[in-house]
Amino acid sequence: MEKDKKISPFSAFLLGVDGMVGSAIFLLPGSLYAKAGNSLIGILLVSGVSALLLALCYAALSSETKQNGAAWLYAYKEFGRFAGFEVGFFTWFQGVITITTEIAAFLTSLKLFIPQLSDKLVYDIAGIAIVLVIAIIGLMGDRVSSIADNIATFLKIGVLLIFVLAGIWFIHRINFVSNAHYSFHSVNNAFSNAFYMFTGFAFLPVAAAQMRNPRKNLPRELLAVIISVTLLYIATVVVAIGTVGPSIAYSSLPLAIAFAKHFGNLGKIIITVGTVGSVLGVAISLSYSTPYVASSLANEHQLLPQFFGKKSKSGAPYVAIIITAGLCALLILSGGYLFLVPCTIIISLVQYFSTSLVMFVKQWRRQRHQEQLPQGAFNLRGGILVPVLSLLVCVYILVNLKLKVILFGVIALICGVALYFIDKLITKKAKIKEQGLGK
Image (tube, rainbow, N blue to C red; front, side, top):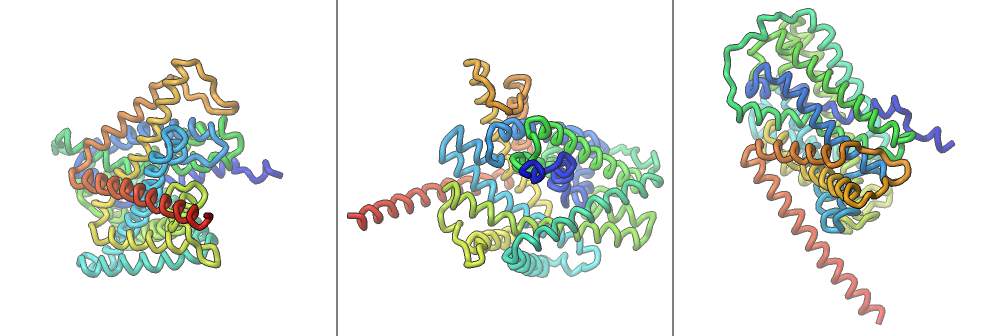
């Protein structure tokens, strides 16, 4: 019976694809093309390889524990509570900023039909209203979240396949001809932002404990998911460039514009509906799961302050939901979609770097002391090579982000450190109070 409850390889594959494909492929190709031109196709390939290196570290570490794999867990076990707390904080905060980014993507997509959203005040009011609505939906439970997630999966994968299969017949070689020159810095910045398309790969290793024979299947699933999604992204970008050429640059809705060129308003509507439905579904799904991540870290692992874990009579983590929604509302006011994307990346890098560092330490220790792998664990071949390359990928992405984005990450880090010491102080006072009452 227990075996039947495990996730099958095919279900794990779909889970991984669903976690990776989001708003980025619908909205980012225009701005990325403006920075890198046709090199964008190669950038997507390199991004896929980079994601695979990071994912292999997750796969190896998740196979060494019976618990669901997560960056905070690896950091906690290897480096102690402070590291676990900080990575746990960034794990939750990544969910917060991803929700905001998807809402920004939703509003950006609607600008095609509602031009008033180009006004900053209207945009902010609409964004905050959506935050409140999906927070209320999050209180309704897992069923609503699952329905939204299923609809989003159907729309985004279906629309992308329609775009590629229908648009491939309208590709013209002349559209790939461009005399534009792009600076090395511009291309590097395009790579850093393009990596946002791949940040969802970490979702699959988190579910490793529910998979059948994760030691054998997880590396294969990660490989299959990342290769499939990379090829889908490349095919989508090739069709987009091949149908409209350099005019795709700076377009906030490049796929809709490309499809509309040959299929008119119907094409525009199909792509926009797919985009809107998929990104809103992802936002709703995350609005449910993100507060539960915070609640779990607080109650089960003591890696966030206890107030994050407070629940209503129905079991909903209402404090975490309120805090998550409040931060989402503030982030909506901070900037648009193209600002939030790199901010999401820098928050994600904390988890990727810490996981790669843990893997490096473990591999180094095994090489020096001839330590044996735990029974059933995935053997990451090559010694320290993969984690070293993973660490270099993280550093490379970081140094190519804009200064204001790095500043955003530094502020988030300072907030996380402050929260740790505040929590430590509150916990210490609570223990003293308990000891006083005990006497």
